[in-house]
Amino acid sequence: MIVVTDLPRLLARLPERWRWTAHNLVAHPLSEILYQVGLRRWSDLVHDITIPEHTPGSGRV
Image 1: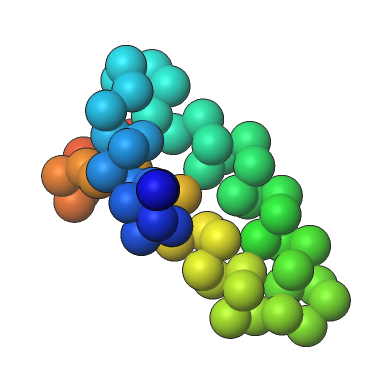
Image 2: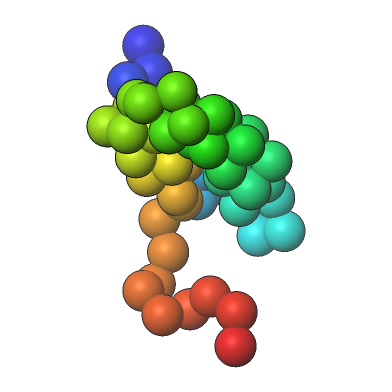
């Protein structure tokens, strides 16, 4: 059984070019909708659990 907290680890196993796809295409729009309807904690959760494991500071330059 996949647990929600396993999602960052599972996303990190994808090929590098796909690791951030769920976060960028699903989590950003969904977390914005949740935030706008007053569900801030759910918004933060959706956003944060879709961040794949990565080295901090290794994003865009």
